[in-house]
Length: 231
Image 1 (cartoon, rainbow, N blue to C red):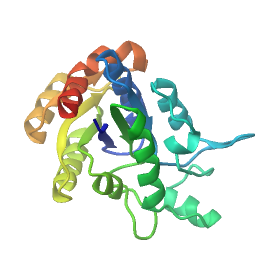
Image 2 (cartoon, helix red, strand yellow):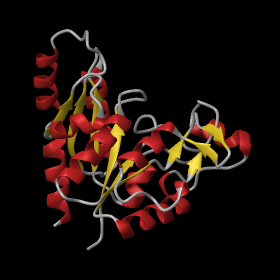
Image 3 (tube, helix red, strand yellow):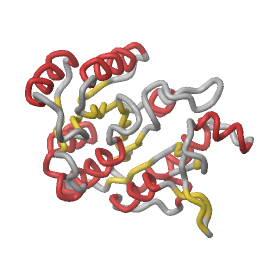
């Protein structure tokens, strides 16, 4: 049976896509699925003897079972400067293109039941002069889970991103709340409004500072949705 993929989008950069993706990988593994993570494009990578490495991609690999056979299968496009990928790519004359991403995804999908693909930045983050981050789930034909960083302003950001996802004819199968601001006022009321406004299920809320493994139970509903898609 072919692997089931899901794309992890965020309302912005810094809202906890990696933490959410890693937590989801642990939840999927706890549900009995072979689950592997992927970070197609990453900037802010560290130079190592083995090449450029992204902390986000390494975290996904650590949370994966099976692990990718090569680092490039997880992260085909890695750039050193911590700037928008389209600028970093232009600096080194290595433009982000979709075929290497498709090839890497297909390789991962051969060995796994589920592939969790983490986006870069927000839904429309530029990857090149002609590509935006939304091209990845559209090309791979992946349903989307939206990570909402729970902070002041998240209601507007979440609704705008959900509208953009729907406008691109992508399937938004649910959202995850990530408590990035422990001092956020009235979080319960904000969660209620998000449920009403997004009109798609909340698949879990990750506590502030929770490690992915310990928080896996909070994304049991997300794992169940993906497991049902896999059947």
